[in-house]
Image 1 (cartoon, one colour):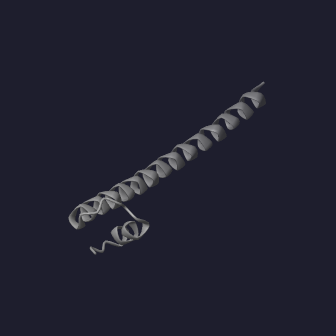
Image 2 (cartoon, one colour; image 1 turned 180 degrees about the vertical axis):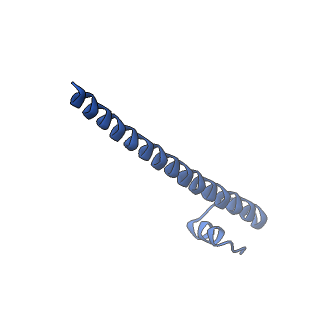
Image 3 (cartoon, rainbow, N blue to C red; image 1 turned 90 degrees about the vertical axis):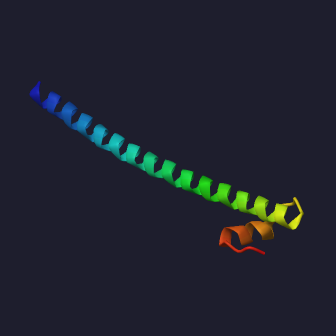
Length: 73
């Protein structure tokens, strides 16, 4: 009887460890995706600002690359 409870407690502890690992991974992934989203948002804002400045409203891949590098063309 005691061995069974010990095994159950051990299994429960293992599950708890896995859950905390998963939660940490999820938090890291969420932070990474948020950073990526903000970088893309910043890039698009830069492209829109520079395209408005130039008078053209098309965001070409070249303009996006330049915006990501931080160049003003």
